[in-house]
Image 1 (spheres, rainbow, N blue to C red):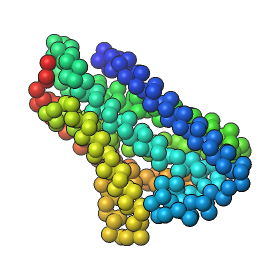
Image 2: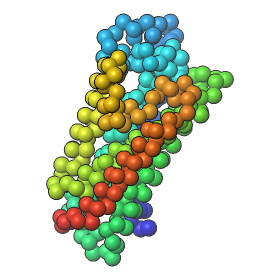
Image 3: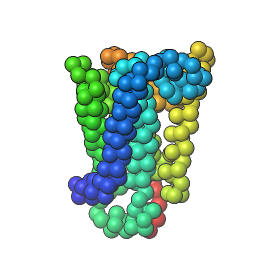
Image 4: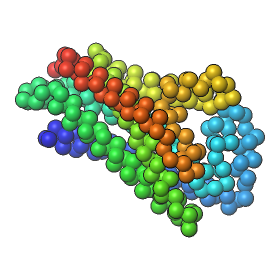
Length: 268
């Protein structure tokens, strides 16, 4: 699979930057937690005094901010956004980069069918998302273990990483589908990011209006709410229905990518 190896090599720098950024965020965030708790600040009381919207951003009411696992749960919501942005830009960019960089003849002159091109590129995306999650999962376990000795949180962290990986694959395949369908390859990544941001803002609106049952059906439109970080960090298993729904979305976006990329006019 020469194309697969080429894609892994070409995207290694980006993978390294995104992974190290996430690791730095984890270490810096948990370091901040250690400083706040040493000052004997009651983080739960502090969060409870905030407006509803701000409470959601700081995890008030969802997590026990006085614990290592609760504070990490708040941070995970931002790791989820970071990972989703990386996934959607990677998924869209990996399909259009030859056209964007005016090197599409590299693919055209090679005796490789288009379905093989898509397959190897998507395998590269899966491999890089897996590595990204492996790195930040390991960094999370090491950091949290240093703060809370005697309480093994590794199982809960890996459940969160599985949830993150699933959400990332939704957005990665969405980005790939947008790139395959779009006529203007310069706009594919931008459009994918806009869809992601709308989904994220929708998740905030739903959480702010969590007392309204009329908002519950909207949860299906934002992958950011498919998995409840508070439940997972509390020890619950991954829910089956969101997993099945996520697999269906990934399958639909992947199928759309194969169908539309086959018909795409390559811009040399």
